[in-house]
Image (tube, rainbow, N blue to C red; front, side, top):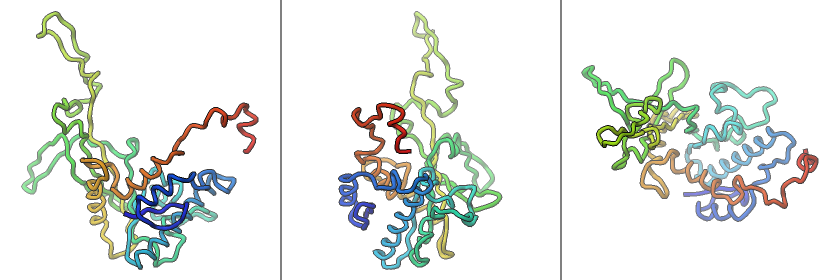
Length: 284
């Protein structure tokens, strides 16, 4: 696995890129050289396009796909937002519209795969109805499978259902499989064991989650369904985990490089905190 950082701006083994990135401060566009926030997002998009151009050279022109976190990157690439699908960039748009849009055509990715796990944006699975070829159906409480959602308009998307590890494990209790916390009994006390009822509201509850996989096919010879299946399988190729991860392995590794950085959401030391409102806003 390879990694790229804006520190040395070259592709190298992931472990080496990870060490290089963690040994330096965050890239300059964290604060940005521009005065507006949109300028900082534009700088980040241009840096990524530079990395993609170098990746194309490294792969000697072989086609490649880009996996991105749709929620975290929507400000970098406006073209990946639902409201902008199948639209052209607006006049005066400074940000890169799609990953690779600012580099030569032959170096651009063949496909973009948008991943989203945000709970308030991705539907939560509650039950599964399996319809057989003979017309009969079967209800299931959980499912770890990949499902295709075909809308009335636009391109289809895929949902990878995830069963919590605690639910699948022995002695998990299975709370959440048939009802929600709103219907949980509060329990009853009693001198006799037969009269006592367990307070299920205090116990851990489990429910399925979903990973949205939305491929953007940029070349006619690329199959969107094959990309969705490959992405789902990469969720099983975890680095240090015996179960499935919410993100495919390449995206998980990229996010982990950022999350493990010493400056990630670090609180400022007391001596660096502003002592007054004037000091806090003096650079604005």
